Image (cartoon, rainbow, N blue to C red; front, side):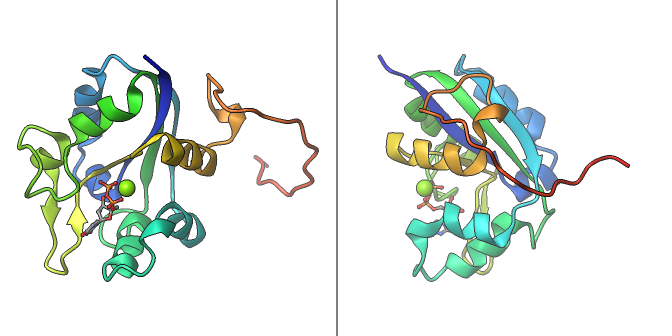
Length: 166
Ligand code: UDP
Ligand code: MG
């Protein structure tokens, strides 16, 4: 079977509810390895690009607010998992999108809820298929942030201003 990489996000509700440890423990059952991890505050541009396929859905604006942390905390934990059949293994343990329909022992079944506005606050994101995994990993991580690189890279000189320690 294929060695794959997949993107996982612990969403702001997961962080606010201190579910990080629990969720990582459940994911460790897959025996996949973490090859990238960072905590970040999600800018609007990144949020919209990540969910661009859902533009036009009635819940889109609320979803962007949710992932940016308007209702919880402005932090998301982004991870890349690698291993055999990683995409399906993680999706399986994550459970269905709708937390009310998700298997009760899946991550979303255990920790998700539906808000009064109808948004599925389901604590975690996981890439759906190989195409999405590649797009999402490249969107959230630079090659140098991963301990294992599975897509082609090139060397490029980039001029930029960076915040450094004084
Ligand atoms: N979502 C929602 N209502 C819906 C469908 C999706 O609130 O009817 C939210 C939910 O947080 C979901 C995210 O939008 O995780 C992305 O939707 P997608 O259909 O891609 O589901 P996922 O891939 O996350 O299972
Ligand atoms: Mg999706």
